[in-house]
Image (cartoon, rainbow, N blue to C red):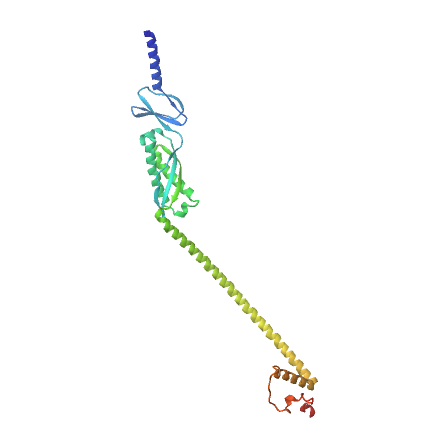
Length: 293
């Protein structure tokens, strides 16, 4: 092969190597940091073909998409002195590659630092609230407070915390029985309270009914006595009028009543003189009082 051809091939190879060392591509999902002997020189966030000094500068790529960090579950003491195991996760974005490189260098170190920040903020914020608040609609506000606190601390790492979520909030295993017993006693207390209220209402209704029954019976007895008295008065008046008009018939009627009451059983034994006034109508004779008239 001729020296000219060899020189051309060497020139092409050198050009390719030089181009390879001088050019780099930043994808749409990436951002890059150009280093020269380990010292940051510039940040590249725009995607496309970029240039750098060959052999002198290196490129470190960072993800521009949302990244996730999953801290280990943390034991948290709440405001009501209850303990829970909080399992959380967060999503973040690298906003300042230069600061990120200087603070943590890579995503592994960043996850370790953010785990500490997230758990520390979670212990502090959750410690201000009781368990019912965490299990209610107030939970959204609590998580927003945690996110704001974590975001303030994470800015020093060159990242932005987009979201912090509480995946689970479980009671420790040793507290389950105590919480269950407390819930059962609370339900029993509420049941006894409702039962007492029902008994009180029943007694109140029963007392009102008894009082109304007593009033009704008293009024009925009063009305009955009045009617009975009026009837007796009318009967006495009729008897008196009848006696005045027909004394013989009235005497006969009263004797019949006496016979009926005395002889009603049928086995009555009476030891009396036959000529007594009581038997005056048995012989068909008129009473002595009539004979004297």
